[in-house]
Image 1 (cartoon, rainbow, N blue to C red):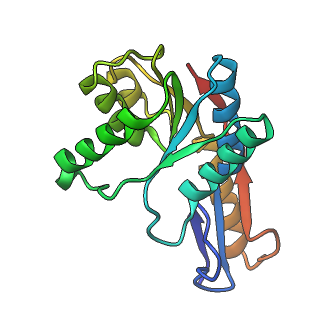
Image 2: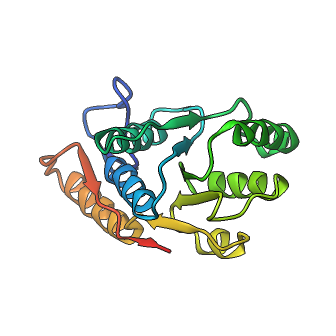
Image 3: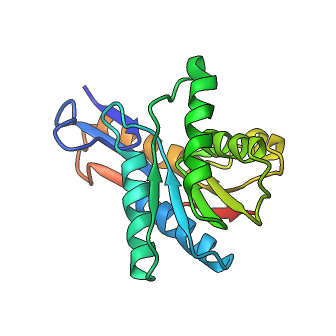
Length: 196
């Protein structure tokens, strides 16, 4: 049966030969975040991600690209994933994040793997009474307008081209349903913009 997934499958995770994916260019997202934070004049950087689960290695790809871009510019990059990722363990998640944030050099630019993880960072920053962006600059991914605007202060985010991803996925599915299975297995769509 034809299947089009939003995102990408990692190595050996593709369900069948007709499966195709359409997703954001996670490598470009990582590079854009690095460039943005460097342009802000920062010299210390970190990536706040999650422990990967499932077949789509999106957070790992974003981190690798972010780190590679920074290394190419002569900057090291710290990484935090934490043990807790579930809202069910919010207090433990926040305590871990606060401890990590206390230990990093400042000022620091942090790329969060997505907007909800960026909100976690901002809450830890608030608890430590640090200043944004003077002590900690944060950029998220997804440009979830409600999440970004409700953050205090409102946060910057990289906007993936979600409408384009949906449009391209529909095109690929139409081709598969019309018995024209040619084309790439994975369609990668660049992000649309950084929303400051």
